[in-house]
Length: 389
Image (tube, rainbow, N blue to C red):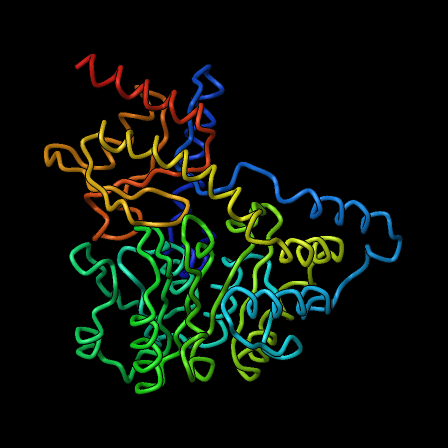
C-alpha cells in the first residue's frame, strides 16, 4: 500500500527560506558568490561577557544534565528584571515567565495550548508565515486580517468586528511589525486588549524587534489589564545577536503560563544550562551596547535605502527593525520575478513580499544582516545589471 503523510503535512509547504537557501547554496557551489539580503539573522556576535559566561559554565561538570522545563531561576529572574527595566512591566519570575527555545517554538506551543481543531485564529496579512503554517498544523481555521500601508500597517478593529468572533480564539499581533517595519503604537495595543477582553480572544504580541533602530521599546503588557488576556513573546535572537542560541520567552498571567508549560513539558526536555546562564548575562546589556549595535544597523540601512531607490522602490523612512520594506513601483514585473532575476543575474538574494501574504505582493524586503561592504557590493551589482539593459 502507498504510504502518505498526514493531512497536516499535506496542507503546508516547506518554509520559503528553507527551499530558497538550497537554491542559493547550489549557486554558491557552482562558483557564484551570492550576497544574501534575505534572512534577518544577525551576523555579529553577542557581548563578549555572554560568550565568557557560556565558556565558564561549560567547564562545570554538573551543568550538562537535563534542566527544568521552566528554566533556571537566573534566566527567569533575568527576564523579569529586563521587562521591568526596559518596559516598566512587573512580572513574577516564578509564575508569569516561561523561557522558550526561540519564538518559533512559542508560536507552536501557544497554538497547541489555545486552539482546538476548527477554532478560528486571526493572522495578519502581511505577516510572519509561521503564524499560518502552525495554525494549519493544529487544524485551526485562519482568518486573515488586512494590514495596509495607508493605515500604517495597523489593524482595523472596526473591520475585525464583522468577523465570526464567537469562533475565533486567538489573535496574532507582531509589533514592531515584520516585514513592514511599522512601529508599535500604544493605541493599537489598547484597542487589542479591549477587543480581546470583549470577545474572549487571546491576544499574542510577538515582540522580537523592539530594540532594533527603535528609540522607544513598547510592550503590550504595559497596557492596564493586558496580562488578563494577552501573552507577549520576546527573543534574544535579534536584540542580542543570538539567533542560533535559540532563547526566547513567553510572558503572561500565571494561568496562561501554566497551560503553555503543560504543552512544552511534553515536547522538549529543557534548555542547556550554560546557554541559559549566558542568556541571563545577555539580558544585563546596557543602553550603550544596544546603541553600538544600532549604529552598525543605521549605517547599513543607508545603503539598503540606496538599493531600494536603485530598484525603483519607495519606502517609509521611519520604519524600524532588521529590514527595509519597500514598494516596487514597476507594475510590469512581479516581486518574485525581480527577486529571481537579482539572484540569478546579479547574485543578490532579496525577499519578495508575497511570501508574507497577498498584501505584500508589490513589496520587497531587504535584510540589514550583511556587512556594509557586502551591501555596497550588492548595490554595485544591481547598478551594473540595470545599466546592461
